[in-house]
Amino acid sequence: MLSEMIKEEYIQLGIEAADWEDAIRQSAKPLLHNGKITVEYIEKIIETTQTLGPYIVITKYVALPHAPTQYGALDLAMGITTLKTPVVSGNKTNDPVKYLFCMSAKDSETHLESMAALVNLLSDQKFYQILDTAKNPRDILNYIIEKE
Image (tube, rainbow, N blue to C red; front, side, top):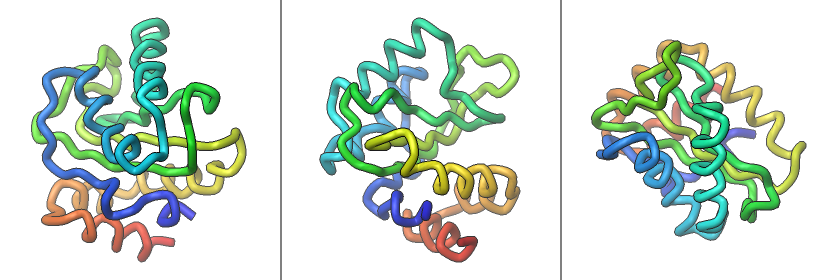
C-alpha cells in the first residue's frame, strides 16, 4: 500500500529549488537521511535524466525521480515534495514540475501495487488541492490513507 511507503518525515512542503537538478536532490533528501537510498542513487537519477531527458516527468506538473535498484535503492520508500516555485525540466508537455514523488524500490515488483495507487491519486484533482494547501505533512498522509 502507498501509505506504507510514505512516512510523514518523507513529505516536504514548499521547498525552494534552483532548477530541476536541485529539485531532484531536494526531493531525495528525506529518503537519503532515513537510509532508504544512497548518494549514488541520487546521482544516477540526475545522470540518467541528463542522458535520456526528463523521463521522470510522468504527467502535468509531476515528476517521479527514481533509478534502477542496483544504484543504491536500499528499501521500499516514497517521498513527496512540493515546490514553492515550479521548475522547468525540459518536458514541454508537462512542465513546469511542482510535485516530486521520489521513489526507491528494492526490486522490480514490490512497488507495483503502490504505483497503481499513486496513478489513481494523480488523476484525483482533490489530491492536488491537498498538496497545494496542506499545512503539514500529516494532511497529505491522512488523505492518502483515506483514499486507500
